[in-house]
Image (cartoon, rainbow over all chains, first blue to last red; front, side):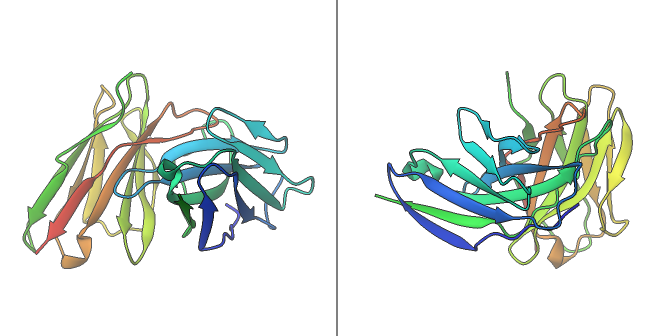
Length: 113
Length: 113
């Protein structure tokens, strides 16, 4: 699975959009981009995933560049409860894909009032 | 639908003892993955079970083992505990199919003294 690079920490004002970048310059054509987050003392939470098109769900939007070498997770209106470590993961998805997520160090997002 | 449950939530053991942790996946999920989280190493994949068979294994010593039952519930066992085994042990379940988004439990906090 491709390696990802994320900034170690970011701040965001409450109510503003939080834009979390992820670099995955060695991503290959059959690798998806996944985002998870971990709020302190809880298990990680799945947020969103995508292959090449931008994706949106009730939690966030995922913007993937045309060359797929980087992506941005957008939390449109950050709240204090969004303070967490955000992990960007890329992995191959195929029939019988295996359940071994490889977590990096992630980005510690602090939402401030 | 109920989430992933893990028991016990907290555990204190002595070096040399063994421990068994339990995980009940979301109803209908056939894949259960286990992860270890420590401050130094972050989140690391231990192993995955799918339909009672170990499908994938991380880079951990043989003291770490697991199994899955016909109802998809899973247990992991650590024998001959060492101080370095102190960690948060997380279980995640998924349908086990192509996309394989994983849903994590709250974890078991193991302290080895």
